[in-house]
Image (cartoon, rainbow, N blue to C red):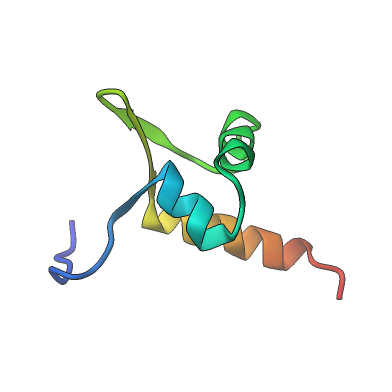
Length: 66
């Protein structure tokens, strides 16, 4: 596992993902339920890894038609 800088974000909460994508929390939960956005649980919290959020955005960009 590679070392990360102390200020580098590794995981995001659902609220943080929603803020970064400019979506509502419900939309983020729908994306996770559809399997389009990978997430995992730690205790009761649902989290999204930075790499999975980046992969999701890359996928959206690849799908863009313009």
